[in-house]
Length: 297
Length: 330
Image (cartoon, rainbow over all chains, first blue to last red; front, side, top):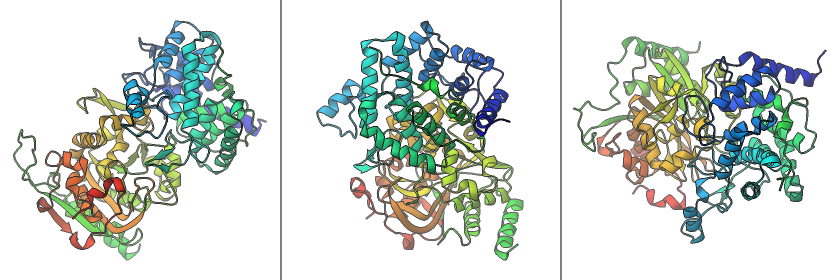
């Protein structure tokens, strides 16, 4: 008889296998068009299976000439999901040109708040900034500001890539990205989407983004008490949040930091992206695909 | 069945059978012009109904307002767009669940072919978890079946939106015959006020534009509000929950403010202008309403035909943050 943990994982993997679209991808919901994000999490959760190979074949066809990935077949333009695709490529040990192009694009991508014009305006105090815009981070899509979640996924991808594709520029972007995460932390010790205050008033953290920031700050034991406070908050959030997505990310973050989380439980979600993240978070799940060490110099 | 519900259903049935000829956006029909201000000189109808609480006679008040607006929904697909951008138990960020549940029942009773609820929260990734916290999932029957997550819906590109070609919108939004902006009456620390027009930020899919939907801020908040309403305004109806609104540092961190009204109409600019007057805000000083005036709708008081309650006795000044103190209505 399967243990509770095995059952949690196996039911989710079974749903993913059953709901894969004929093109190899997954929609956010069963029967809907394939999107990069649910496809990437499903492919990572099912790594090693034929379903993951089919998913990767589809995602590979979405890579653009500049090295980035578009978010869906019918949607034009580069997206933050480039980070997830780079992570998949490295999980598959495919270090060739497609990955290198993706990594190059990530290293060159940053939020527009940190372009030279905005930095100059901030330094001249022509505009008031609630955060240090000298610290480059990553946007959801080009032409926008940088935020926590896309920054975390870029950090994971670039730190993993540094094992074989290291460069001073990559190292610099990782260090700035980590510093930016610390800069936008909410006063309660966690993170929201990336704005700790608005008009001088503190904004609270969210459990899902607190978890993600902790994923982005792996191998930063030097942060000591700062991360300790965040983990105290994360434990409380894990008990209190009604969000299966947040619980899954909090669990992944704890596992990656060697902290034993509470056992996951809960009903299956119709949202296949959440199902994929939950499968990654299970004790026998593939959460380690998000594991990073420090930047290899 | 209690008598109130029986009366409500009888009224709804009558409306459904009788139908209402033509949906003209609540404005008197005028010849089309190529003017920069195509609506100059036109009038619009706005209905204000009193509602002291979320429990008493809400359906009846809502139905009366919709019928006064002469909105015909028979045989049409309707998308209800509430505001549940995020959740804080200490204040009132969201369109109250009672308003959403009642609207679902009312629009069904009016003969709509299908009624869905759709929202794409701007800050939080797990939409259904927010729906849980706002009690939408527990108090709206079969919520998961009627709800569409606009952040994760399939999309289609639209040309000509704020110079972004294409700009993507959820298919559920594009295919709906009527979108009902079930907005919350709130002050807003960037836009001055967030009402039925600003509520359409939630139509933009996070799957492409992220959390928050930063692209709209780079377009410019006022311009983005106007652009969204240029695309979707012609098939829209507004129903603003002003029973308890939010004042001060809205739309997230403000405080509760009882206004005791619901404001409805098919001209969303006119509805928002009327809400502003109730809130003690001068609509002519609100950036997005300045841009929308006579292009998308009517904001001049003298050209808004007030039905239902007269707004004079309903004004209750919403506290404004310092940055917007100049918006105060004289």
